[in-house]
Length: 418
Image (tube, rainbow, N blue to C red; front, side, top):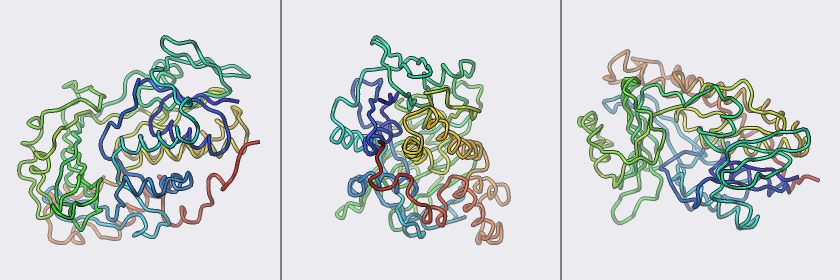
């Protein structure tokens, strides 16, 4: 009853760990010949951290990540709009982590290989398509023989070959005109460390947070940052490769005056050894992910703008929801259908919210009301309104404090199939 997984990123590897935990055979097929620690910083919300802890990864996450203590929005002048505690400081039973994406992927990979054996991940195996039948699913691989199993789960990202076969008319990802430049720099952490800051408005913003510990001798930490500018979509910046090296002179002049008393943005940008450029893209939500014994997860299912720090977290939740559905329904197409019924409405709402009414929509509202220049935010927007806005997104994305702390485990301790 082997499950075939297309893609060895965070989604696919977490699913592999989950299947091993519940006793379901699987194999992961990854296009890259060697899985390497690519990317920059991401955030793991408490709902995802809970699931990774349930996989026995608490000490490993502590070793590679920074516990996020505070999350805040600031105007283009650096004025505080809204600040709130995060993770255990906010009352969650689990922390939130800021972590390098590549380090997390390598952690998941090494844990999986150590637990399930090194042959559970096949590299250099690019998925090109699938066949589904009543009693089996077949995965097609470039330059290799096809592989048959009971079910297929596509974790092959925003350019998923399996999604493309399901929806051949869809076309490339949708770009709305925003370009992101991402990097890490050694700099002094702000607001006491463990803080995540978003400053600016819809047309221009900076995001920054530490993903490594503060050096006690230098006082510096590895700070992940994202600079964003909005441009004319007709200019053709359609480069979804997030490993494309960029020239800081393409965007640094726009941030030349962004020197706050808590962060020198030009210095942060200049401090990066290498900067990566890519457009902010997503896809329209699909009305269906599952075709018999084949389904989608992670960015193959619900690619979304990187708003609300929810993308990697949802990939982890997808994996655990699939595991829970398999325990309830067996290794059957019904399990995949049950997973989709539970998860797709949530991710559809999050994806649409991230296009304009996500948590950072408050930045543009303040820019529109006062140009980001104020002495007391209460005179611009009541703090009660700001708190309600923040709470709505947490509830939408499934990580409100009360609901998460009260929810039973997705996968009961010791539960195994059969």
